[in-house]
Length: 170
Image (cartoon, rainbow, N blue to C red):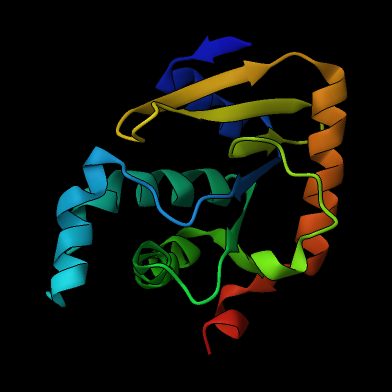
């Protein structure tokens, strides 16, 4: 594996036609979301300025022709963080992401990798890397062709079963 700087990770969106993201955790503990998540739990409104950079980036790369797709594998009943994601998702969708959900109960036959991932086109696998407590993270490019092929299979299985946001939440 090769650690990627954030700018290197972002460059992959510009040099590929498809960026597919798999999220496997029901809860994330990312520092940049602490305050927004706490506001959500208290039922307070959010300006979502903390998300603006990502939304602008998504809008730019999708307007240039890159397809960004995300599947969240979720446990039902939903964790608080998953419900928080339901509030944030429409903003990312409006910016250009295609976000879908797959209940964990429907995935027993899928051999998931150990960690969240990004698959760019069919041949570039990037792991999401988190510290033990989930507070810090980053990205690492995987060079093992076998793992990349396996994740391509997982992508195809998951994407075929996942339900678009608008259908899943209503």
